[in-house]
Amino acid sequence: MAHIIKIENDDVFIGTDDNKIKTVRKNELDFDAKIGVEVDIFEDDYRTIITKHKKENVEAVKNTDGPYKVNKIIYLLLCFFLGGFGAHKLYARKSTCVLYLMFCWTFIPSLVAFFDFFIALFTGSDEFGKILI
Image 1 (cartoon, rainbow, N blue to C red):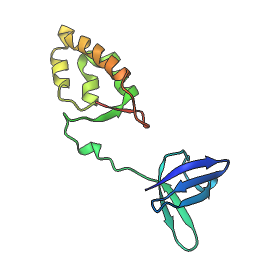
Image 2 (cartoon, rainbow, N blue to C red):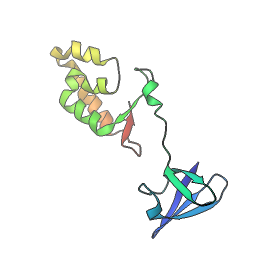
Image 3 (cartoon, helix red, strand yellow):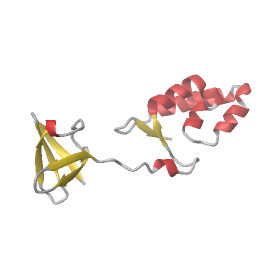
């Protein structure tokens, strides 16, 4: 897989799998060039096309109780405002959301959601702003 390894003025340097460096102008790319971005290179005799590599969405087929990546901001907002009802657990595809809803009248889920909020708040997010729940 090719990666952007350096950006200098209007030039973008791409390192390829065969340890070569390809240089292109920044205005030839149809995406925002950043160091470390995976790219696909398509070449023929006349032109070179470079596109941002699209990762497959493997998360959609995961088990509902397994680890799942969610947007950190959305998870925190749901946890803070609707945590007592288990909205953050529903967003994270956890079956425990049913327990939160069943016992919301006891305010125990609100207390647990308070701790969930702070755990998620201090969990580091990836480059896309997602955390593993």
